[in-house]
Image (cartoon, rainbow, N blue to C red; front, side):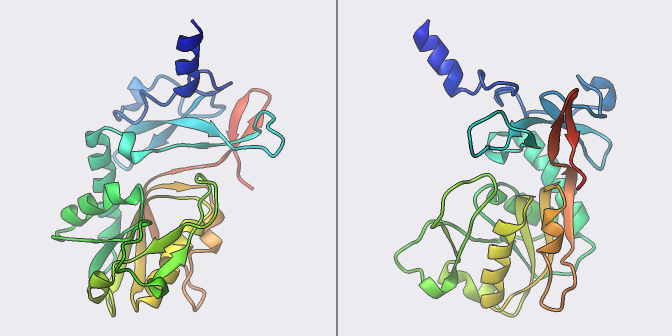
Amino acid sequence: MSEIASVADLCGQNLPGFDATTDYWQATVTEAELSQSPLPPYAKSYPARLPDGRYLLLPLRGMPTADGSAPDRCVASLIANQASIAVVEQLALHMAEGARAHAFDVIVGLPTLGLAFAPLVARHLGHSRYVPLGYSRKYWYRDELSEPVSSITTPGKGKLLYIDPNQLNLITGKRVLVVDDAVSSGTTMVSGLKLLERCGAEVVAIAVAMRQGTQWQTRLRRADGSAIPVVAAYDCPRMERRADGWWPEYS
């Protein structure tokens, strides 16, 4: 029994107040097929509405607290490389449709989970290739073609974002569409924008599966202060705990 309990803990099934994510991200459903109301309060999941009127049910994940106490803030989670191929394809199609309004020459994918979407978005938009950025440094990479990066969902410091010097000529002087899985605080995306600017690329738009909250809006701007357009398959708020469950945090 102790071994079984340990496996359940490792699978996340015993996290207080939150579901294991095993069965999430596998299908989209109509409103009639939803297992919960699309309106708050929410208990363990958030129904994200897609442009075609269908919903993708997302598990809620508590934000860590400094003292290890029960979280009073949470976010809806999407892990693209654990989602079904059909769901990733559908989200990529919505991302591509939103990006069509913007004129760009090349598509750049951000690691790690943005690389699940970038080739699909490129294909839907009629591009035969895309340029991937990465966290793994090959021996021929150059330090000046890197940028420090951090993320709301990935703790720790010291990670660097790289571009392969062999692909530099594909983006220098070009208009770029940046593809990632999500934007929340905007810190990861800012690192990508800084690296692309150093490479001589002009970012004309960003396409993500999920726009989370609104913090990113003040950070994703051009040098002249104008906002960089961010298109998405869906939006979801950050959540705060109230007596009857989780509610969108609007502040």
